Length: 209
Image 1 (cartoon, rainbow, N blue to C red):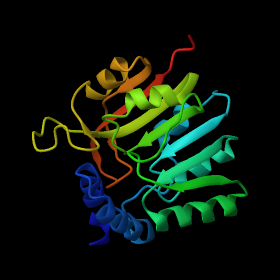
Image 2: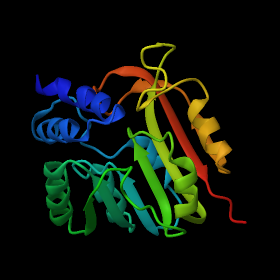
Image 3: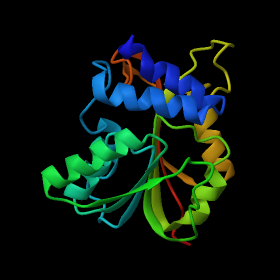
Image 4: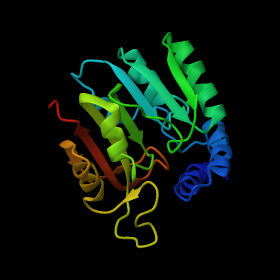
């Protein structure tokens, strides 16, 4: 069923099935009724009052967050393995009268660079293995914003892709040297599935010094 595609693709991405995941996401972006088409609320809240700069949207998808950021004055690059999703992202940007750059690359293959971003967003994307790389890629004072699923104590999900145990995501970023600006583990409506489930949300900053 089309509405099962987002969860299936999230799992495939977690175990490295990029080709299969790309096809699932392309279909989901076109047909799924259980994907939030609006900007992620946690991301929108996190950037309130923040001076726009260069933003990287990891897993840009159909562009809902990248276009939102561009409309707020950010210079946005989005990466993804879903070509159809990125086509939709570019169309949405054009319709909104803004520009975004899209790069066909997985998060593992993409060169995050050094001290070049003011914001990096991981919205329902795996972050394990990335905090140190993201730290180096951010300018001093830059932010990383993440939202993902909580594993709710389910051992089958523990350590998998976009599922995180209590305090796990916070510890990952603290270990990489980040200052935690905001962190919560609520039960709320997820962007994928559109049901109330355990979530994990983080805003962290690379220290200015």
